[in-house]
Amino acid sequence: MPPRIVYLATADARGHLMRAQLLTHSLRAAGASVQVLTTSDEGARFLAGFGIEAPVLSRHYAVQFDREQNMLRRETDRNVAHYVFRPERMLRDILRLRAWFRDADLVVNDSFHPALLFMGWMPVWRRKVVHVYGASLRHALQTNFSGRMPAWMANIFGRIVAWQIDRSRARIAHDFAYGEPQPDRRGGHRLATPVAVVGADRDSHDDLAPQAAVYLNPHFKEAALADGLERGLADAHMQAHLVGEGYAQRAGWHAQDEHWIERAARSAFIVSAPGMAALSVAAVYRKPILLLLTDQPEQAINAQRAAQMGLHHRIVVWQGRTEDFARTVTTAAHELIALANDGSGPQTAQKGREAAMARLQHWTVLLHGLAAAPPVR
Image 1 (cartoon, helix red, strand yellow):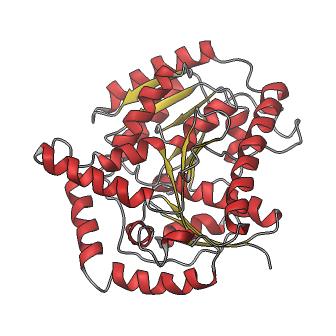
Image 2: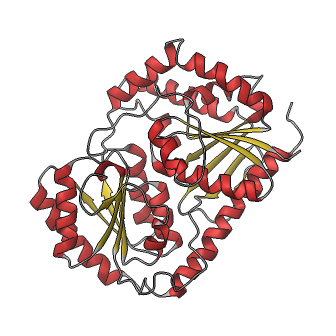
């Protein structure tokens, strides 16, 4: 019987869903049976675009954001508290997940869904749970209440969360700049964030002029921000391929593009918030990246790491003024164009393709091996 994996991908960020679909296709090709679950109807539709059918576990749990992708901390705390303590929410999901656990060899939690955080330290279920998370996201979660409550209370919260996470069968922390896999012999693993692999046809987009490959998470909905971004790129004489579910009704934008990676790999530069997935694409395909920084703790950490690791990037911040934002985008775009190599040539894309395949293989081997191993008691 093939290894059986249940993969719960939270829909708060599309990076979680992209990782889920990449790994699902790769694991299935390696002979595993994979069932994906997610947490919103929009997330299910996103996965369907990649050929993944994903039932929605719960529509009640979600990190809360405003229209500019700033995290709303109090609203998120309230949402999580309602989810955890109202019996028709998390308890109901745990009862549903029991059926999935029964038939699974491995259950992946990407990233930090409360129901699987709870099940991941319970003796009955912990032997099957693997937590997958960006290294910066774990830090942000454990320090969630730092500065918002007395230090001793915030520290206790962080220690409890860390204990919950570390009780699971395995943990996979990922980062855009990690190198070779690093296991710690206590169930912890460090892997480079997986990214989509460009097609083998080197000439498929070589007739296109270099563009800015833009991807914004669906939390970006503010029209004035999009105005400033479009104007800033246009003033830099840079054409753009624009993708963002929050701007799906806006002229020139696409809600989703399953082949965005092809554009990104051959772009002049990438434009995105500093999520781990976008930074990984920039690192693997050796592309400069324009980072649209918002108030989201783990992304602030990611932006700092981009500077530490020498990734060619510029940071812009939306502060509510379209003209000022457009000017900063134009300036940053000119600087990134000057930094860029010839991204339209096939050589850089081919090297990136090989690196992306290696990253994906590391994940596939690890998860397949965990699922196929004898049950942990």
